[in-house]
Amino acid sequence: MLTPYADVLRRPGAFRMSATGFVARFPMSMLGLGEVLLVSSRTGSYALAGALSATGALANAVFGPLLGRATDRFGQHRVLPALVTVHVLALAAFVVLVLRGAPTWSLFASVILSGGTFPNLGALVRARWAFILAGEPPSLRTAFAWESVLDEVIYVAGPPLATVLAVSVVDYSALLAVGILLVVGTVLFVASRATEPPAGGVPPRGQGSALRFPGVLAVTLAFVFLGGLFGSFEVVTVAFADEFGVRGWTGLLLGLYALASGTSGVVLGAVHLRATLDRQLLLFSGLLAAVTVPFPFIHSPWVLGIQCLVAGLAVSPVLISGFALIERLVPNARMTEGLVWSNTGLGVGIAVAAALSGQVIDARGASSAYWICVASAALTFAVVLLANRNLGRAWVSAHASEGDAADA
Image 1 (tube, helix red, strand yellow):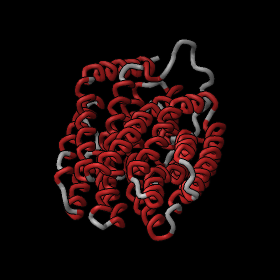
Image 2: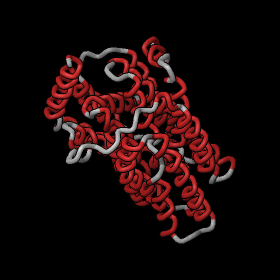
Image 3: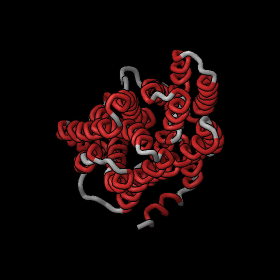
């Protein structure tokens, strides 16, 4: 089963690129949770904590596509170091402001700057894979599955680490770890120049956003609601554990969800499914909607842990098929921007759902707030279902264009 993964990682520079990218994006699972743990610890308000975390995610969603286009145009090695520098400085300012009890507006200002400049390493790594494995769709799908598995490993290990640091050491230590890991990982990632795709220069006049390519908008919109599931699940699970007096379980519960998702991702990346990517996305999003339904009815941390394992199995397949579909629908010169748009969708959903979850938690408790997770998963499936015919046409068109290019 692991042979396909070994084959892609043997490509020149591939393992180093993937490993350094792993270190650089490890903080993505710690940033929002670290902000929630710090702010809720200092203020006692989940509404404020969720709103700040959501604002940072929304800022990343707004600026992400613009920075993705700049990266395609100027190259990763020129854009990424500047982003990381600004992010780390803004994150440090956010921590200091929280610790000093600064006015709320200043907290939002600093989190907007830090969130807006947090680099989308997942898109950058996948853009490198698309460059390395150009013209090899099966191998590229395996590589994307590998990166999705690494993302899940990050979400297995990151939340427990953030929780332990914030609860057992000091409440801002999770965010300190975010800065250190991001700087170290970025330096190593940028130094791996052999796998970096060439700068694309100025895109042709009138081409506009990558959203204009058929099918990209539909996948991005589906990912908005998928992000809503992620954003609500993280904030609500923190509150659920707190309500039941097991705050230290937060990382474990989140980790079980990600562990199950990573396991299904490993299997999916090693097998060859005959269904087209648009049909895979429809199937997996429908399964995700179904397995998310039980969450609001759970009133035990032990039962929640079991449900996290079951429901998590459906997460990674949706991400893998969605990212792979974007890769087929967007030309290589716009790959980073296209992948960033899907991540932008996730970010918008995370932002809105995290803020809404905080309000519902404060008003009605964590179990009621899990309905936001259910609605988000159902809407993800609804979007894919409604857009399925257009996605199928876009897939056929992209597949035909790829064949024409190969014949030429």
